[in-house]
Length: 390
Ligand SMILES: [Fe+2]
Image 1: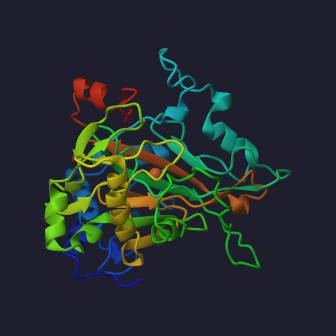
Image 2 (image 1 turned 60 degrees about the vertical axis):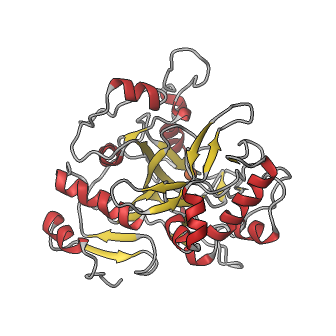
């Protein structure tokens, strides 16, 4: 891959991380996404190193730091990195009784995601240290699998932005990639084919054009992203001006009042504008439609469906191929993403897709531990959580 030596961050990258560091486009130099190679994230980051990584994410929206398995990075180390980008959120599935109203209990050892992963193919697949952290969501098709399992296909998901409906929305998500599927179907050349959708998967009423773009899913364990900074910039000036003052009512469920939030996100460090989750709420069964302030539900759908169709055009889309050892970090304010259909109940480790995900919110912090106050944590991180940094 060609080194983008014209990028102004390359001299800083080499000064701070060593002369072996390279930066190259994930797709092409004029599009979002950069791959960083030749750096080691397994130790503590200096403030200057953290600032540079945050700058790279601000400028490129997705950064994939390759080869961290060779440096022995584990999931504790990943969580340390995450703390520079924001306050990590605990994942509800790590708790035995989330939503019960009782004091939260973490799942007992035998029910933990890491245990279920490790039981499927002993000796071949074993989660890395730190995978049991409450902040880690193990994205995996391994639990329930084994040599005698009967594989099936779980359909791909909706285009979305992670947790855009909270007062302080989620800012950053990251994957640390452990296993990727390597086996391909000889006839079609793909790992899986998306099964037909059940009725109600999407809210009804989308145009054929939008439906087609939504359903062009990544197929081989990849994650597809849409660039909502470039999509915003490509709109006519008068439309951008209108969108700049557009508010949308965010809410998770239809019976919630929700609150008004700007549709256009302005990055406080760069001034760059993007469309923050400009989708109507395609998740038909679970998520309440987004309503544009001043419009009724039907007009909101038409307004936002048009924007979503705009964002999902091929020139704004990037399908990311995961590689073991990658730490892939993306901005939730300036991208949409979609998960692929996956095999589950796999009977061969060659079909394993296993990644550790951490998501965070709030301001970046160049130094650790983060300076978040107890009050801020209490208000915005549910359940309240701080990383234990070794
Ligand atoms: Fe997501």
